[in-house]
Amino acid sequence: MLTETPAEIGFVEVAPENWIGVGGARRRALDQILERYPLVCHGLSLNIGGPTPLDHDFLKALKHFLDRNDVRIYTEHLSFCGDTGQLYDLMPIPFTEEAVHYVAQRIRQVQDVLGRRIGMENVSTYALPQGELSEVDFLNAVLEEADCGYHLDINNIFVNAMNHGFDPYEYLAAIPAERILYAHIAGHYEEAPDLRIDTHGEDVLPEVWAMLDDAYARYGVFPTLLERDFNIPPLDTLRREIAMILEAQKRAENADEHVA
Image 1: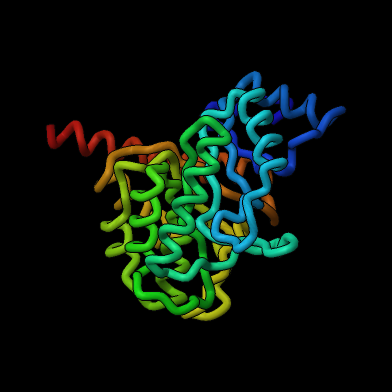
Image 2 (image 1 turned 60 degrees about the vertical axis):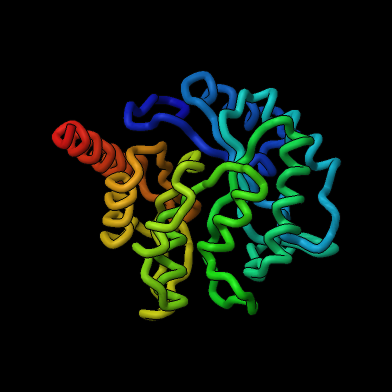
């Protein structure tokens, strides 16, 4: 991407934690990319559901990075990732009314500090703590009370549906679609029929592509990013999957025109 500008790519995403305070050759490389593409950020360590106070030093550094780089959207995971230290994993929040109020209040704090509306992403899970709400009801309640945006992860819905035995299309039908900022689509690893691991290291499965088509048909086209964090293939392979996103968006737009 430093030597060419693929036409299929409409925007890029980085984890701000990996770039805050970075200089030298890496910073120059990022600047080259930002000259050509809009930037969105998807964070890793906000710890929005964690038991410890929000890290205001981190939030100040984050705000500086977002503002300096004209970041269009900032989102985080609806999870917790630390207590007295960083767990380097995304742990599920109990789906309770108490947790709704706690998390929503912390999201509002973050939005006040950053001076912008942020988005929360539905995360993949492998075991769930007890709670009186379903995952999608918890998601809706938090976003409504916090009045924040929604970062839709199509693959995570499918992974959780396989892991926990619910219908992914019923979940998709219940999301707060009016709050969608953008979406992720990614591959995952099938450990067993009832255990899928959200690796971001595999090709996107046909079942997940089908869910993206369904989401566009229900809610219209929205910006969608292909996630690939490791086991990265040649750029031409990634470009083919990005082209599949564009084709799905075009099908949805043509269907809307036909109905009209």
